[in-house]
Image (cartoon, rainbow, N blue to C red):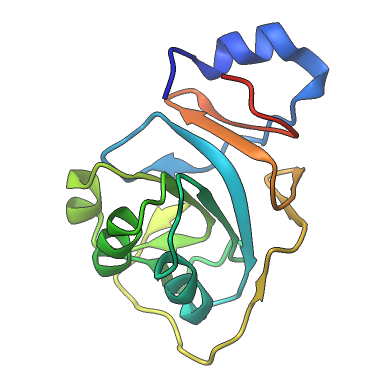
Length: 160
């Protein structure tokens, strides 16, 4: 994974980076993770999240625009185990997770707004690999995400 910190990357690469506003917190066992981005937009329906983590991750980070909803969880322990088993480096969700204790034991990066016990609907709705606007920045498929204890950053290319 390399020896990097988001603070050092910001100092070195400055305005070439997109720095999301704070508001997401770590729930996974890995607080430092990075990788190329795959995106998903869905609202209170995790069907497409399930489809995405069932695919080979190849060290990617799934960035999910859940509209900031706090009503239900888009990700939990079963999807976390599936993501880990399929080689995803992490998941960043503008929304909620559940099963926080188990997710915290998995060596997977997970950033989200909050934890809530309610599961999501399953209607098969959502858009994959589209440009997103999350936490004040644009996130596109193929960008690179770096996340650690100080937050997360987005770059158009690999940095570390």
